[in-house]
Length: 271
Image 1 (spheres, one colour):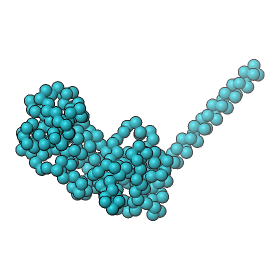
Image 2 (spheres, rainbow, N blue to C red):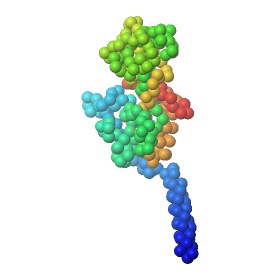
Image 3 (tube, rainbow, N blue to C red):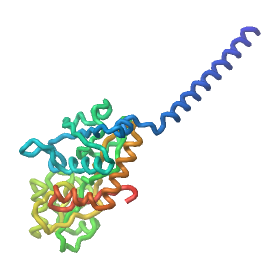
Image 4 (tube, rainbow, N blue to C red):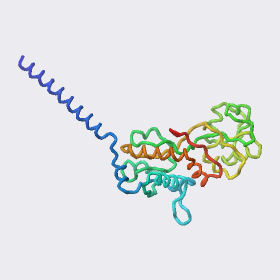
């Protein structure tokens, strides 16, 4: 009987201790919620450290003098200007970008980084700032306005590319395959085919006029800014800056510096 009472008292004590530990943990989590050491450091005048891989023009590359140039470089500087924070750049190979943020060596990644849901446990993402997905392209005077109309159209794609896969998955039969996506766009412009299926970057970089990039994308591939997991204030500030950049059309001006044709504007919250 005594042993039974001792055991019962011990179980009650252990249960109370477990509840107390859980309570302390919850209280600590509530106290830490909203704290952001990265944002606090930036508010003291330190620079926003932007990691990028300068090997992907027109998003980031180096010019003849070794200076970083590109859409991502301009966007980072514009975000810094709107947040009143200086910006410095850290050239890093693409496969090391997220590691740099997770290790605290960089504050953000702005480097044509496609949203990858598998990394959401380790980092957080901004709203999209560029749509790099698959799109339908026609001549500006074409009567084709919807992908539904492609079933009876001649469609150009890069042989073996994502556009080729999409066209076959849709059951299209009049597929005109080319060696490069630019050749697919050439075929559209010359009137040899009715439309082409290519990625947004290829379409926006195409040097000739007379083509229309249709929205929404057939397959979405948004580019996002990568931030530390424990940086809620910085993430909110970056998202607010992106919304403002989209709203006042500054994004269009930035894109026009680097793309002959206007790329699709990404869908962004509060726009």
